[in-house]
Length: 293
Image (cartoon, rainbow, N blue to C red; front, side):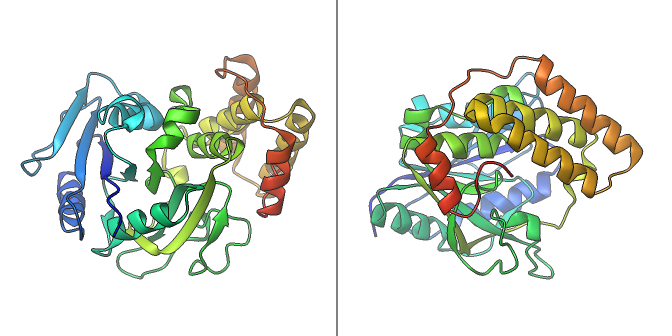
């Protein structure tokens, strides 16, 4: 197996100590060289964890991308002390002992591969929710494929990607930060794979359980377009998402929050604008997800 070094970043709010311990145990059991882990307490103390796991405790909650970026930098600038970083939800669990080795093999064999998205499965039923398959044709979660985005709490990233395109967008706080990084990586020439054989067990949940879900999803969708899309595609992409949102018929409070977030996305700073090349638009289209939906 390749000599690629693997690290892992886990962010926690400190409220799931048993699940965190189980996750860290599953990382410690990985085949091959030891995976060094950094746990980031995102505005909270880190619960008691196994010896040898490094911790960073932040005085305030920086959000998911902000917390993960701190974890990346704990491995040196852009994570350069390792070749691959795993990003794992603190209530997840690596289902197999060979996930780190599969990552080493995948990245060693494909120099264009920048990001791998794992399959998320319910630990009791084994079911993978449709929304956890990062492509439009999501009916068969057991089919691995090239994709255009990835799952934030169950993935592996070649650290060279961060060195080239930067980290996750801190200002997003929650929602769509993965797609922002994915689009920048694809624009730089990297590829993204969804791998059904790399599994993270995670309890089945609904994203709308978060009180800020509808507002941040809409706000960040606008930011995503403003930051990354050619000007011609911004209204097309956002118009399609307005229509999709209305078709899904959310509750009146949810719709109000969504349109409030949509408005906020236009009236607030979204960070630097670096529109993708038209050849990247074509690449996304060939991969099955043109950046208009």
